[in-house]
Image (cartoon, rainbow, N blue to C red; front, side):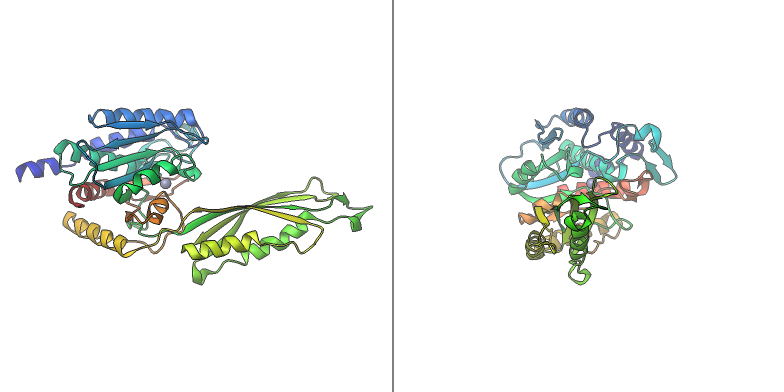
Length: 380
Ligand SMILES: [Zn+2]
């Protein structure tokens, strides 16, 4: 028992120092060299544990992925931990707008909340259980480079590892005062291009067929598909078109973001978006895209995993709740859609993801690190 108590002590200053090292290695998703410097750092930290570490070269505009496995894992299905080490913050954010600093309970830094804080506390939990050999199931921890891009490179690896896993734990940030995530909407991405007939806006107005006017109608039709009661939202987030003030525009282009609660709604809405027809028959519409992240629905198995985590949190000394279905997608969408019980939002608590006031809460580090460790030690 004495050993267990000593082993469970958390060295908070050392954890904050570890988070600082990871946060100060800036890693915007698109900058492959920068993300690979972060991959080097994480790879070195993992190698120091003496566990098998695999580095998989990235593709599709993304950096490498690093995967570590608990020793003597064997072939039985275990726990897959998903954590992304890319951020949305461009290089130089650290110097310019968001230096690593502590202000009371708040720790500031680019990607600290989303999600290097969570990545580090999972790493530290993995380190502890590896050292104490206290894991029950094999633990595989995966650090991915491209979540903020929609995981174009790591998705296949995530799904490969998830198919072998009994549980998936995702260290995305906590929500609303420490709540975790047990369901997320599915995300679809589409592009619509309208092609009309250009003409001089003064001398030949009647000969033109405006792509922008057509698209204006389509935008209203698409936004009109939003149905809050059914959890469906559609957003035209970008518009471009036209060449000059005095030209009836030939082209207009938009992007559409779709969020749905379940796979059936995803299919139905994707079909509706692809079936958009022009009001002006002289304008053509081209629709591309589809569902990118499938919905992450709270199954009875996820409910059971959540209840187990709640029990562990109670033993540690805090109440764990989950949020209603989250609107934002994560890599947990991929694993939940494969039917693997997935808990998400297990990372650090804080606020301001993707902004220049992004911060994590120091007070959340220890309890959430302990929860991760206890999940490793008790899931079977
Ligand atoms: Zn994230």
